[in-house]
Image 1 (cartoon, rainbow over the protein chains, first blue to last red):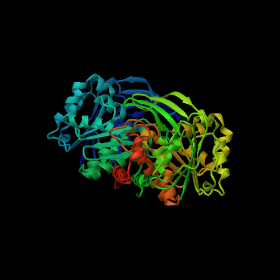
Image 2: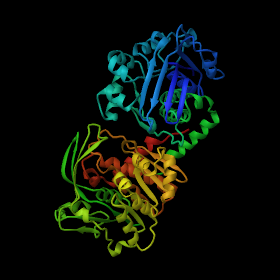
Image 3: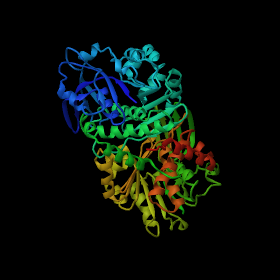
Image 4: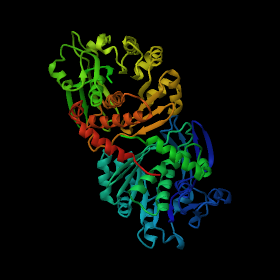
Length: 302
Length: 302
């Protein structure tokens, strides 16, 4: 089934201990769409400026990514620059220029209005909600990503939007901030009362934890010898996860578990190179092979 | 098969956001032995003072724990006091009084000299080596725990001891400090050159990663609603891990994987209460039940 994603498309300057990339394609929606398109057709709703040309679009072409919803506005594309610490667990933002993204009001083209799998990337919660209002009927699965900026700055708007969402993907600290509860299992119960039935806690190099109201599932990050750039790992995870669910056409316990694994597998490719470079080159065969290695990483007999 | 452990037995004062315990039984060897004794007979080599009476010994009685090697010296037992931060990821040491532990020279009673499974707790590397010299023949499996204090302070001694060890259990930072390599997979290759064939990286609330020269295996920490005191979790993990191996009587890929799971399961009980309280009360039935829940936590189909 088709999967709709709304989020940012950006140019990034990235510096890590392993090198540097300038004006490379970035933004949550870019990573998400590239990852998800391995499993299901993706519809992208985002905004770019005059400086986003056919050359930049090329990476999305030849894949199951529909760019009808990619709005071109007058001005520059969202630009972000950041530098990672030596251990890559911390990053410093050197520049954030919203540019055309400041005026982003997501508008769904007519053919998108029947979308039944929707992922609301990390943008203003009121804009996230406006996307849900535009679709014809309640989506089968709606996922949402957010961050401390919205949890602190627009808590009421975020709460209102969460009422209409099935899956929330945030990190440990954001979970604690949103719920005021340190323990993650107890925090999840607060989240369930807000709307979502599934909380996915993204833990970077430590993988991800899914707390559903019926079960808990944990996946590690795939251990790699080369980690060059963590940018976009979380968005890639979300894309692999939602893409797998939409491709399967159902979100039951078994598909939710598998989706977590494929999310982690896809993210492990992203971090091997700068920006979307590795994600854009990974093949179905490589994904399947790494998923099998992933199974060996976690399999045991009691 | 019998498992020999050498390490500390102590009295601890512990303060966490969930409460306080005073003069509670602690020390790596205590947690290790209690955990391991669920799987195999344990021989303990440690030192205590005059203040360590039958009352304190009672917790080890009625279990497969041989205390012949528990030396009683004149003076006070090792005492440690610490306070955990609100998120329990950091702790401040308030007091360390080595007392009789300062004069500890591990001496194996005759019946211990045939031990084929040995765990060298976190003590001076030259003392760890002295234990290996005392046993009659090369042990089947020797495990070693150490810390930044010895990695920095006695690097040559530690390197010499590591030559005779099969399994090294340390945390992420210690791995990086020991090898000078940030990436854990590459760091493991350095460790393999030092002696051990297996590196187990303890990650606290994020579980543990085993890097063997033939395979990698990851276990999460079991998610709990109540975590009251993390003291001893790593030592409990090591005890469950080594105990399972010794009980199985072989360290092949399958038993190493299962041992990691039982290590994590045992540690999950320890942190539920202060000191050894929960570990001392846990039953075989509870361990088996939690191991099954652990399997559900990590199982998926591709």
